Image 1 (tube, helix red, strand yellow):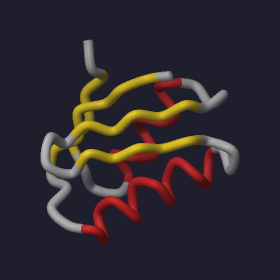
Image 2 (image 1 turned 90 degrees about the vertical axis):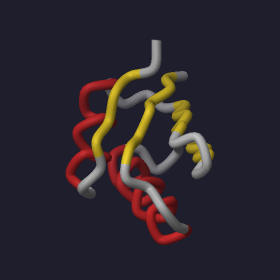
Image 3 (image 1 turned 90 degrees about the horizontal axis):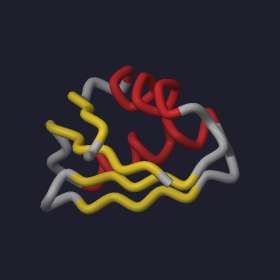
Image 4 (image 1 turned 180 degrees about the horizontal axis):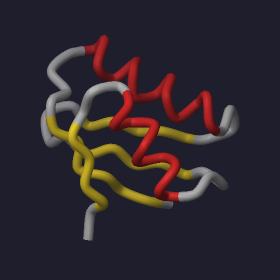
Length: 66
């Protein structure tokens, strides 16, 4: 499981975009999005770098949570 801090998410559409981007990499991934904190938690077999890139391609700034 990996956690990302995602900047720029403001609404339900943003949440759906992030979930869709991750789902395109790994249809079995479990994605939880906390819109108020900007935290996205992903349980997936996909590489962390690929997950990060997929979210960034949707137009968001992404940092891996420490």
